[in-house]
Image (cartoon, rainbow, N blue to C red):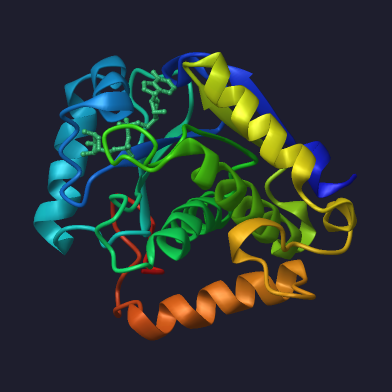
Length: 231
Ligand code: AR6
């Protein structure tokens, strides 16, 4: 199956998604005060915020572009993967890389704990102000790169879930504009793509760039969640 056949775009409330994990557009302190984070926290019940508070109190705030998993409590999914997208215009030109990392790390965390399906909202495209037209090709490229690089096709299905049908259409167009050869053999469309990028090289490039800046600390695998730092 082509990697792009594993991607779906839907207009729905992400809290109702019946997938193994939904992704939360969180902040570094996992304080779910607004946007999709608030909707997820409310639907999951108070245990979700408690679990997040414990992670932050044990490990400190998340870095931008990293991800951590918790239980999903009252949600229909099994896990919630919390990732921190960049605030548009506040990362000295690293926003695209950080947004890519948020997708990459979320998929890595999902794969690491054996999940097969995951649903993303439009990370950073609300309160964090990332223009969706700019964000969509980055989200698509980094996701295709991560899926292409994942051995054994661990993640079978990635959904992008939008409240707004106009946002869904933007992502659909970005997917359609993704270079056709990338469906099978290349991972590099959009702003992250260098000439001749393959999925493996795209991901390797993301990893080498980001790990150089944010090496994982010993014991980074959590008792209550799995966490990835690529920022
Ligand atoms: N289902 C799907 N998408 C949704 C839903 C929903 N129920 N609700 C909102 N969206 P945002 P950010 C869309 O602001 O920009 C929070 O306070 C929304 O239309 O939630 O990454 C966090 O705690 C938008 O397209 O995330 C952080 O402090 C997208 O979800 C901060 O906001 C993301 O919007 C993160 O800001």
